[in-house]
Length: 293
Image 1 (cartoon, helix red, strand yellow):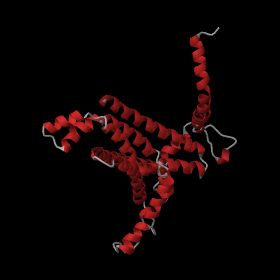
Image 2 (tube, one colour):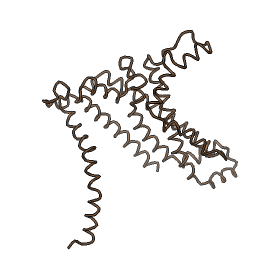
Image 3 (cartoon, rainbow, N blue to C red):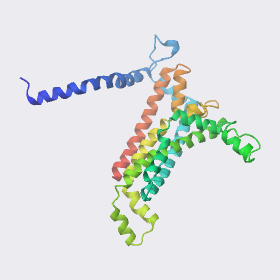
Image 4 (tube, helix red, strand yellow):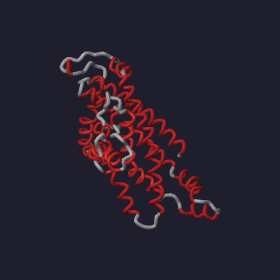
């Protein structure tokens, strides 16, 4: 005779088991398989007979000049887009939180880019900044500012700048929603007391708002950093890594090595190197978050 406690445990296990099986098959197993692949010479030429090469794939990744370029591009993308999204998102949230009317309308306007498809948005930005695109049409034919069409996407700086501009534009709305929720938890009594003491708007923002939502800011930093390292669609659609892989990020370079050259072992090693970097950054940021909290 099963006791009630044992029966409850079995019932809970029976409910969890289907989900755990699916999670194991489609998440845990692929990760373990990828980890094993990173130690083998796994490419199109050795698809059915792989040889163990130890850490050679990891060495090849770290010694690859193009990987270093893509890694630097990813760092630059993250360092530019993360602070920009946070600052602009926070300013928009403060503005919407303080206006008396049309709050829902403004939320919708600023959140629309977030729900816009990355593919569609990337194609629109590519059309705008293309050599024969909309921006050059206005600069040359309408305003007569430029004598010749500017090749925005044909350089490393230009291509990355357009991708970063897209990333910032799409990220403001998400940060706005997160910060708006945090701002609504700040007690109004604090602002009223500060006004009695003669504090101006900037002083209240600096001494009340920022300290009170610091945990939310650090949470946004962690999430946006992970998102910055995962940038793929915008780079793939706008520049395709051109010219000569100078605008590649770590994910677009990994995709190229896996599906264009067939070097799956190299790509597997690259993925775990990036996962390690992200884990270290996340640990550091969460330690800061825990300490400040």
